[in-house]
Length: 230
Ligand code: SF4
Ligand code: SF4
Ligand code: SF4
Ligand code: FES
Image 1 (cartoon, helix red, strand yellow):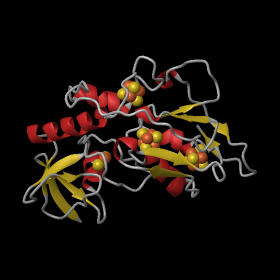
Image 2: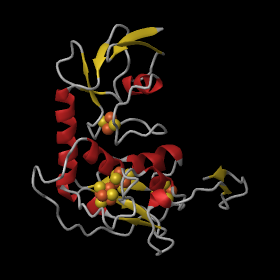
Image 3: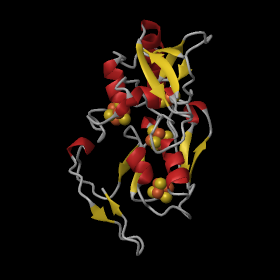
């Protein structure tokens, strides 16, 4: 059994557990954005950074394994500054159209910007007009100007559905998600895991906010297995 200290609290962990998993199990909140519990962590957003005593620099809690004797801090002013910078950098290339974005009220980036007092004007604006090809399925609309390149959609398609119809194309301000219509099965898993309004449903054109949606359990009609989904 591994024993460590997080924010002054002695906690235990199992072999192979990350700091984020241990903290979450012990009701210690560490903010995240690119992490999703169903997916492998890639540590790209830098929002979950924590301080580990003896380490030269902060480490991503979603990727760092718990080690016996570790002393971890999740909530210092330096970490807040680091998180503010990470959010600010994401907003550099983000069209902040919350007024008309269906994800408003249910958006992880909007919530974090509010929590850390980031208004998006700190580092200016380097957004470019992107012309992207059609998304992997016509049932989902991709909005590159709202995409934070967290890679949740690509990992969900590959790791949860085993399909790999999505990839990250180009870099920097020009980076965007590229879909392969030939292999996509329109399952919606990518839409389900997107933390912001970069993927929206394209089935109904009646405007609605996602947080006002009522979820019901239903049976998937795709094959004969009859999986239940929400
Ligand atoms: S994705 Fe989030 S932050 Fe961006 S416009 Fe939509 S609600 Fe606002
Ligand atoms: S709808 Fe399903 S198959 Fe198509 S890109 Fe998204 S996750 Fe992959
Ligand atoms: S479309 Fe959504 S899930 Fe995919 S990289 Fe962009 S923000 Fe992340
Ligand atoms: S949630 Fe850990 S780096 Fe994004």
